[in-house]
Length: 318
Image (cartoon, rainbow, N blue to C red; front, side, top):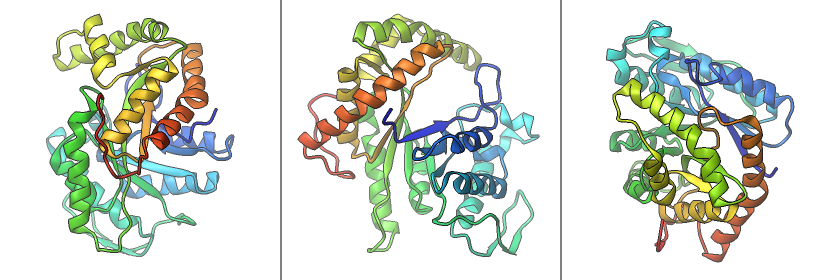
């Protein structure tokens, strides 16, 4: 269909399908030839960094170097009690485990110590990869998390699930500024990506009609768990019109993605194409339109605009 990458999220609750994304990705690796396979995200806080590296380096071998891991704290907390972890240590768990994971990426003997696990002394981790494991840090929008991604020299994935993309420009700018200050002068530029929800159908009206009921089911179920008020149709249409929802015809979605890419100076855009209990046939049609029509149109729009990755542009409307 022309899609470049496929990501699988990690959840531990009945309304999401996958609790072991690395196992699913390993299966996909044996049935595909070129598509990048990654997590979206791996909840590093409740996992073991050494095992995460081992699992994804194994997928990298199975796929011929096509694996990537996106590390995050996740927006759900079910994995913490499930694996016997203390939510009071939420920040410390992620910070310490990310520090260890970053130490594993060079694939050299590791000596490391922290407070929440026993230290490693001159320890090698296997399997090693042929060309290195691609690892991103997913950030919801805190300056501290953005700077931390720069400090570890990992690409940044901004999760924008509400509000206008332009509002996240300061985070993308901060990341590039932090990289410029923290990296050596000859270090390569690190990419910035956005992950946002959306749905594609033949027309704007059809896309909204198909997507809205399932978005509302998903949004309000989670909202009631977290003490939010219920969202309604007006909230859905506002997010489609000026917020984080990329819903509509191929042309509408392509125009909005291209505007986001230009505004934030992105290298990549990931579409979360499923929302709630959307029927399988509608999802497959959405992916088909996304790959065959939206992606080529986005590339065309960026070429016409003279877009250069990493260099934000002024866009009249986002």
